Image (cartoon, rainbow, N blue to C red; front, side, top):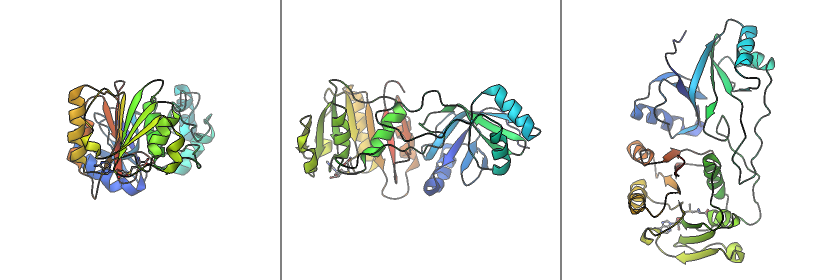
Length: 307
Ligand SMILES: C[S@@+](CC[C@H](N)C(=O)[O-])C[C@H]1O[C@@H](n2cnc3c(N)ncnc32)[C@H](O)[C@@H]1O
């Protein structure tokens, strides 16, 4: 039996990025209690690993003697649950059968703040040990996020990671806000932002898709994104392909200028991720750096005063 000293965190593994997550945990000095192919249970929750697909924070444990005992104890905690099948999945499913299970999350229609009051989720660490959490700072407990997609106007599917980032944040550009989209071609982020009704300054060396010509609130400038100097701006978005240290240096100039407080930026890796630099992004004020379900070999850095 594992003795669980204090609430930890349970990371849901994105299969392709399992090694990146394990190396990151080692870099961060986070002690693994147990790992399966689907989850890794970590002793401390002082820092959020970026390469997890989702993280259950403030994980609590309950010792149970039988399936009936588990059902009684879980019902006493919440009248609705979700179950994440992993270790001892048959036993977990039998426990879940006796509970009021919430419906699975459905595709989100952007803009969305995600599910209202999601129930807690549980899994089994041992036949007699349940782990559960209600502190999941992603739109779904397993981090998988799907949207009703636009298959007509968006020039590519890259807007999905922007939608996911803004859904996680629970905030998006609105009203008369002005935003800049750096590295914007062919233009699906600019499209998604223009659809929100805000003024979009879109910058790339390559042109935008002709499909976007009808958007009068997109102003395109051809050129180098990094020559765009800090100036009063409500949001800065960047999907520029560049080395992470170049982006970090550029963002520091923005942060020092005080001209903008809201950012969503892709941090891309040419090969293996650079964990020290990821940690530098994580330590920037009011921010998180995450691997989104719509990300490939990249992370998304989000900064907002509410974080
Ligand atoms: C992944 S694509 C962006 C996709 C875009 N977000 C979308 O939704 O369509 C990366 C873009 O970065 C641009 N890029 C790379 N370096 C740049 C630079 N220094 N200045 C401007 N654009 C740059 C490339 O031309 C490319 O269009």
